Length: 115
Ligand SMILES: [Zn+2]
Image (tube, rainbow, N blue to C red; front, side, top):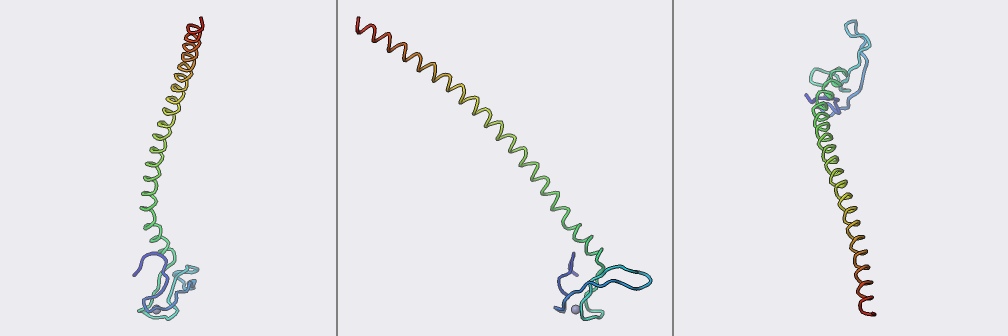
C-alpha cells in the first residue's frame, strides 16, 4: 500500500473521505475506495497523516542542515566583502597621497624649470 494520503485505489477507483459511525471508532475519518470491498483501499486519515509527517521530517532536517550551511557561507562572504571594503579604503588613501605627492613634485619641478 502507498504511504501518505491516498490519491487513488489500486483498482483505479476514486478515493473518498468518510467518517466512521461505528461504536469502536465514532467520528474517526477514513479514506475508502468508492468501490467497497476487501481488495479496495481503506485507510484511517490520521494514519495517512502520520505517514506523510514521517516521510517529510527527514527532508525538513536536510533543509535545516542546508540552511545552516548557507548561513555560514553568507557570513564568510560578508567577511570577505568587509575586508575588500577596508582594502579599497586603504588604496584610496594611498592614491590620494600619490596624487598629492605628484602635485608637489610637478610644482617643484615647474618652479625649478621657470627659475
Ligand atoms: Zn478500489
